[in-house]
Image: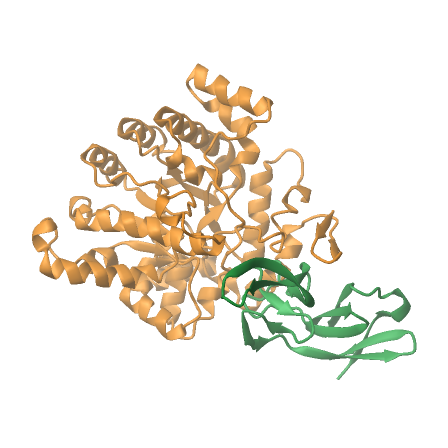
Length: 121
Length: 412
């Protein structure tokens, strides 16, 4: 297992991301709500750069009690990142593909040492 | 520029670079040694509307040409019927909003440069180039405008685009099918042009493809040893789809709907008997519809042969004589896909297509990595069958050896 320097904590703005290479692995490292999340940058669909696309709230459809639709809303809590090739969406906090949560991107450990952030691969 | 998502997140991208965007595709091409096998993409696209300034002057009729060019100058861009659509998924498929930021070199057509970038990244040797917006030309309310637009596009493509890319693009030219006489003239005029391997019916239309007036067009294509493609598309304006409230519904159904409609008429009216030497290709409808239609038509034909008296075998047998492009290949149920490949004789009748740069494109690995295909089937589907039909030569000695090995070498 190798540690790869990702960036300095003080410079890693919440909401931003870095793409790093560790050997043959390509990893997307996100900072979201103060936490770090690191996933394989290879989409489980056709191998696109899964971590390099849009970061966008999950879309929800809200129903009333009588089952009528209230329409579409952006989630207040769930954020996804989207593969730019075809639009596969992944849950920021789990790496699960939101269309089929059995599919998960490989997750990597992120280590903080002082002001330095490393990913372990 | 910034791609703006919800909740203040912004993705800052300086510019789109197709080679960089497709870097993982290039990795796949290297790992799988695609350079050793001829790969033909039988359905790729460009955005011809970005070139209307060059295309429209080729229109023949002075009044119609002035009408369209004047309209452009004033910012009215509805030259070809448009549709409501969300192909970019709200910016999630980033190459749509970023498209105009991509830099190309001066002195060479932008569409050619962009095409060569994605072909090189994917490991594709040849691409059949089709338009995008012009796929709706069959919805144009003016028959004469459909004729003029097809004529102008076909002249521009054969005179400006195809000669610039050293034969790596080929095409099947759009027919103004609403006017059989004009269609015939375009076959006679462009059928012999370099890079023209056939003609294309834009299927977003409901006219009967078996109409007697069109027989001379198909005969002219067959006599020239060319092919006929049916390229599908979605249409939210089609009455049957007005009840759909989401683009996914219209898109999922629409592409298959139009090809199911036209394929049914083609088969039931015995076109396979009338034009047995005409290669017919059904493009961009996926594959799942084919076993469905085979079963539906066979089932009814057994009871009602009097309504299809030209047929000498079952409808599915005629469908197995025709060709299909792979994309967008429904791959969620591998056993169903394997059954589909068996039912259409994929080894000889299926041809790889990317549909790039559209949102649901497929890489060659979607075929190469299938666990149930023989080596011969992989070579045939990825390019061998297309090389045989479209008479495309190999680009290196290993490709030549593989074409010979699997019986697809015809362009020597």
